[in-house]
Amino acid sequence: MKRLLCGFLLSSSIGLAPACADDTYIAPVEDAWRDAQVQYAQGRYKDAFGNFYWAAIRDHAQAQEIVGMMYLLGPETYGPGIRRDPGEAEFWLKAAGQGGREVADYVRCTMRRAPEQRDADWPAAARNCARALQTAR
Image (cartoon, rainbow, N blue to C red; front, top):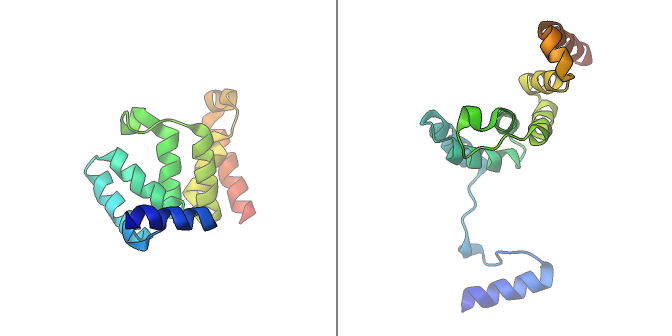
């Protein structure tokens, strides 16, 4: 009853839930990052994604890069627990690039090329992205 009452009072007054501090444990970013790395190495990609995502939404640039890549490559690489979503991939790769992750910048640049450019002259498109990134820095 205490939890229910506590949650109701605080959530109705300031809009936060869960309201009681002892109701949940919020893992620090470092713990989520470490757990994700272990799970990824074990091939538990769905579990790893959840922890990478937790760190990514808390501005961990390397986690943002990995989340972006997992969204980009999807179930073909990571199994049925990870969906392919190019829009989400671009969002997370952009965030990672803004956090200083150069590979994320490069991948996002190359994925934005028109499909006909990728098929016709992929190496040239990749070189153009690399040059653009070098001049931007």
